[in-house]
Length: 331
Image (cartoon, one colour):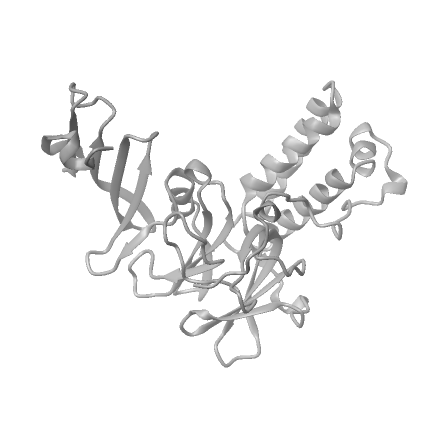
């Protein structure tokens, strides 16, 4: 795999795109909250990004627009009261806006026909039968990130069947400039889109890397499952959450119909977990634990144990101690 070779610091300096401005007319700003937003480029960009995220949810058939409007009004009222009373209103607003955007997550209710996709990056090699159009701030770096719209087309069709607003996308390019896809190797560069059948219903699903917010700074993803009846991709916060809590993207075992995650605590405790997926919900059913952090009661031994969910109860089905040197050599 050949990747563009640029200084690593390019991955670390992240700002909101300057193209985003406040979602309201700053000439009419009259409250301390509005004035603080208009006085800051970052807050103006966050305000517009939240507006885009909210509107993308408002058009989603999976959500109740009445409840969404009620929740948004409540958030605005509470944020105004709290931040206008804070010592540092800008810091308070920045934290509040980022938390709200993260809490809302991707919006699947974007008007696909109301957007111009001519400048979007076309990705045709991620999922059989589908093309993806990634519309984000242009960049030529090895890696870049920012908010984006994602258009979904059936291969061979000129019509964008669905559009999704993504608050953040992390894009890695190959040496030839093409986006890296379907790559989820641990501790390596990740595909901006990874596709597969994540809920084992025979339908294609996909995930978009949204940053590196997983365990130990690992990659995190927004996961989308195909609703075959509606022929729409639906955001799955539960499967997305697996990438936040663990090391990297989950493995998909199609033969056994299980997802596998990996986690660790420090150098000496590792855990491998298996999940079944029922009604699109991941249910943990097995854990394999490698504990060299003292769980064996002997600093010279490593405790290897397996726990399984049996009739709704977790049971230890195997447990043994292995000499440290046998496991790791002369480390």
